[in-house]
Length: 152
Image 1 (cartoon, rainbow, N blue to C red):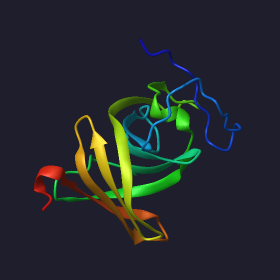
Image 2: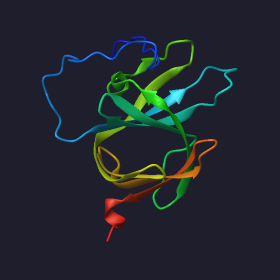
Image 3: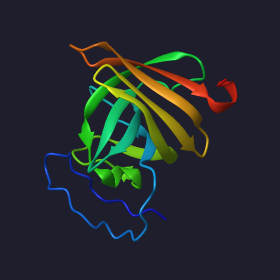
Image 4: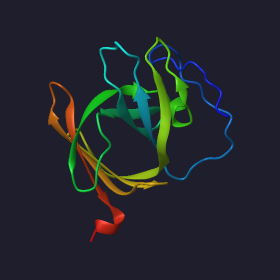
């Protein structure tokens, strides 16, 4: 059973080291969360794509999950706390709740200001996910997922 805890935005609390895990992963981790927002919220329910990057999670929000060989819009969000890698439950500030849909490890294939590509090794998603910056003003990115079975 997952115990709900209130997770504050990244800037609200200092990041803590030594989160109680004695395991050190050889590869960084990722998680995809379903973020259900409360009725009447200005933000729609969406999927959060989160990727471990040192002491933070690089985060994008999508209305739909990235699909095989199809482009899906995503918006870059501020970095999130590492706690979301293992968290499910209510989000502080009456912003709804999150449920983990996918998790695993990844390896960065390309990292530039306008393109970020990773090789995913998840429970369900195995393959290459590429995020390409489409509009720097709105932080609109396009995602494209190519399953490992489709890669040459």
